[in-house]
Image 1: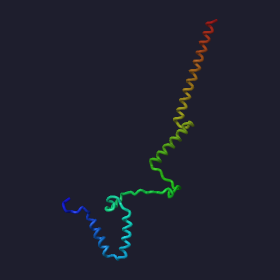
Image 2 (image 1 turned 30 degrees about the vertical axis):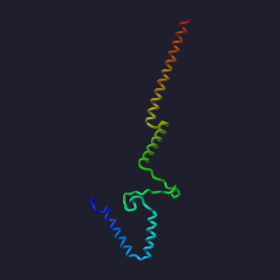
Image 3 (image 1 turned 60 degrees about the vertical axis):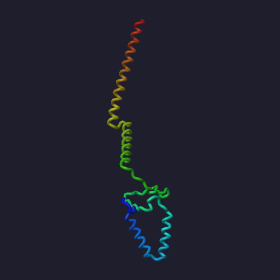
Image 4 (image 1 turned 30 degrees about the horizontal axis):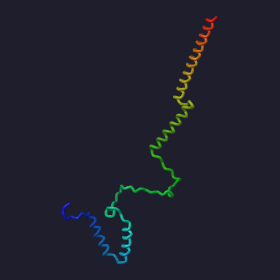
Length: 145
């Protein structure tokens, strides 16, 4: 910054000039009312440069504060796409598992057929072992005689 230049923005000078013009044009009664309003504004003191700089950001999202007594309990909030898909996925899985338990799905039928085959093989193996055991017992009994 060059020496002797002002650090104030140009808009501040314009605002100051407009304010001076308004003061000259107004009646004394109106100026009293405005001075009271200005005193009220001064009582709500802003921190730092907020009082000097006026910011109008269209992208600034002001937080929406909703009081508990103003909340509409009857209104249902819609789920997001991801939440909705997740719920559908869980329900489909539960439905599939129920059908699987009842044996109505293709995979359940195959599992039941395989299980029946294994049971049959085990039953045959047990029967064979019993027959072999009985044959050994018979041989031992004949050997004693």
